[in-house]
Image (cartoon, rainbow over all chains, first blue to last red; front, side, top):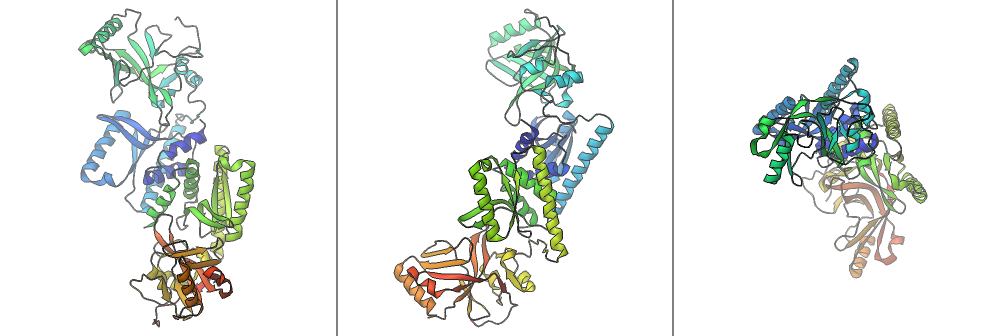
Length: 293
Length: 293
């Protein structure tokens, strides 16, 4: 998928809400900078679940919310504020709002102001050498991250295949389908889980992404699995770098970097569930090398 | 409906075609001039039927067509050229095209060029004092046309009610529902027909809008009607100013000005059908006055 297809498909996702479509198209057109990636209808974590924002600029950590009529009852304003605080607390992101109940001139004025905020943020990042131009060719390419030396959760990193994620850590796979792979550090496993109930597994990630729980649906199997991992029976690791299998918002499958997690044995004894806690939001990448299998 | 609602609803009509949505939104946003009216999916007359253009600027007489993949087979290119020539011949309008098969940069370049053409046209009209600012409040108000002194087909004039059309010609109706009304010139009838088969009538307008045909479905009634009109039995008129009942493209009912027509008795004898030929594309308006009923 090239930028043309990507941008046009992202914008087309606004089609069922005419105000949202107007605001999102207008911001993108007036910003008029295709070195900036957009994501429409971005899921964000909040304390009591997930929220959806209307437009997200990952490089700028800025979300846009289009406030339509239903936002302006007294209760909803309160809920919106809680929701906004949640998103900001959990992600450190900023949220800018457009109130489409206002007059046409006022809406367009608010959009102009938002575009200025975005432009200021871009200039600021560039001045501090923190700006990374959106390159749709390279953003899924392991070499990009090998060259960068790390993968950081703030960069919204995802790969199209398990092998691409593996190849950021010394591998040179042409094909790789397993949910686990070795890491240059023999204490660490590369893990590619589905973080929702699937098949015989009940896996979950907390809304702040700091805790992953893992268990087998079958009580006996869960017990065996838990013991095997805790006791490192089959050379199991207690550290895992996690790329969760997710649906991208254009319907594509992606393996999204979630961080490095470590087993908390104490907490894991409860209900035969393994509890993994995030220890790092940034991990080192490795050039292709010989790895011990 | 205010400009906000109008513009946003017009843009929302592009929602089922993602390239069209991108191009139409982007042109409107980059032109960024809400003194300019837009119409999406505008019907235009052509020699063999009607065509739909993706975006129309009535004040500028310019249409935009978004060329997607299907336009580029050899036959379609030919058909497109014929279609374009037809539209230009019939309406005198200009058509600008955006080829969305091209690269993203090229598409955006084409859109930039189109915006420049639109801006040049606006400047030209302003310089020649031919620019009429889009005013959504006044465009349906009879007083606008009384002040202007005329109604011209090039101004795309339509009214929301029959009474509003009537009140451009000396009336001061609060309510009026009939399909005919008097005109200050007693030789002329104001006519508000449905120009398609409806009820017991088969009315039609030619694609170039120059000829209206009128007949009753029932042969006997058609004969009686034709004779009555031709012989002016009930003080019938042979001149009619026509406002055709149409659906506006946001689903609203409108009475659209088509011109002044005159009965061609010679042609009318054929098949008991009355044939009205357009004689004027501009008609005089009148201040409120006493009219003979």
